[in-house]
Every structure is written in structure tokens, then in C-alpha cells.
Amino acid sequence: MDKSYQKLTITLPENLLNEFRRFCENNGINLSSRIAILIKDDLEKKNPLKK
Image 1 (tube, rainbow, N blue to C red):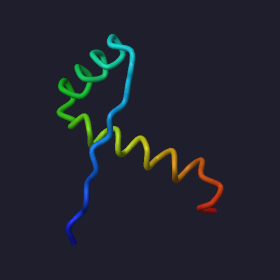
Image 2: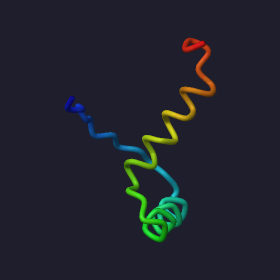
Image 3: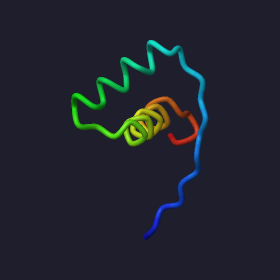
């Protein structure tokens, strides 16, 4: 099953983005994939509509 993707533009403090980008690169993680995982985790743990 193919997934459909949509581009997201966000604004972050430059130093935070640079640090997170380095973290992802140093750990062999794709930045977009990691952000998607963080969003999914928030939705699963903190979304009262899913319970």
C-alpha cells in the first residue's frame, strides 16, 4: 500500500534545528521520519479521541 505524503513547513530556532539535524545524522536517522515518529507518539499517548 502506497503512502501519500504532504510537505510541512515549520519554523524552529536555528540552533535547535541544527542540533537536531546533527543528532539525526550522527544516529543514522532520517530527519523527516523521526519527526513523523514523534508526532505519532504524541497522538498515541496524548490524544483523548483515540482512547
